[in-house]
Length: 436
Image (tube, rainbow, N blue to C red; front, side):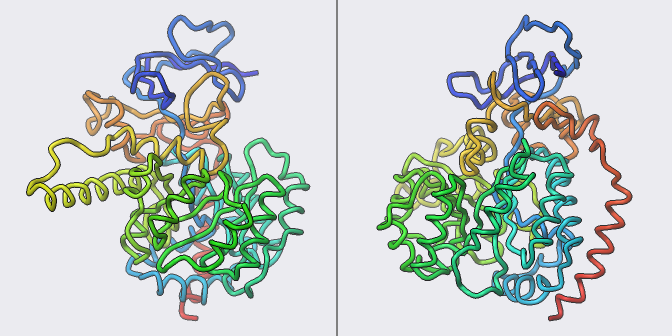
């Protein structure tokens, strides 16, 4: 097994009962973290000098429609209605299996470049098994840790999720891959009949996998009460957006351990509704973060964390003005909390918090190295702040399961020129479909 000792960095572990940041070494043995500290046993280890660097857990993008990468930026001026009509009502039907593979591969590599090591790939354009398999192949080929959330096209009739297809995936070769897990991406209680919503939740519960659904742009439908009555709300349930849920329903979900993933830039820009960050914080909970789709906004989890943080601080200041006549005199949310939304909370939302999201002995060696010596980051007076405000160009290296996926500011083991050509061909094929 390969051993690597990362020596001399400021380490943000995100682990409880440890400092926000500490000058320490990180020992990687195989696919796991063997130790964090000083005077670690470096026998047989490759020594990597990371002085003036910051090491933190790999980021978690808990919600991305990765298959849409070839249409990057086409919907920058779209509302939610535009997106549903043009992406799902028009162009989605023109996707070939190779478009699914290319978009997913390119999107996953883009995530690695930005420091994301775990991706919740919400794939709801799977009209055939070939489309599904191609998307999974793209995900696996990237080297990212993925949770493939299998969905169905929005053009399909309202019906229970095709469990035979998810069973095919769970029982097939991909079901044993170390970096891949599966879940259900369902229409959910807002958009399905109560019977369908209950059937989908029960299918996920019986298989012990995550069930994820959208909820935004309107009040919760009767399916929510049906799922609750059936006793199917649990930590395996993941609600994306959460806009439109009442305070009562948010509390019910939090009490049952369900997670809510906010995609703040997309939610604010398209009309989903305001992020429910504050509602969660008042209940002692917190959001996980996603970026939704490259067609609308850049898939940058750290940007999502900063937007969510600034938006909620702004709302808190406004509330304080209304009650006291002035802005809040202390920060209502810390930078470390926002960083936790992009790491710890994302891992929990995807059912992987026993493996990733923190740097601790025994956890998977999924980590990011941030260059703290560049003009835009130096001096590092607060490692947490530097990490939160890092851009893709500051991400010097990325490791997934003990293997380098980015090093010296460049992705490794990938032919980017060939991929660019494939992605352009895919875009040229798909773009005419936006016209209907």
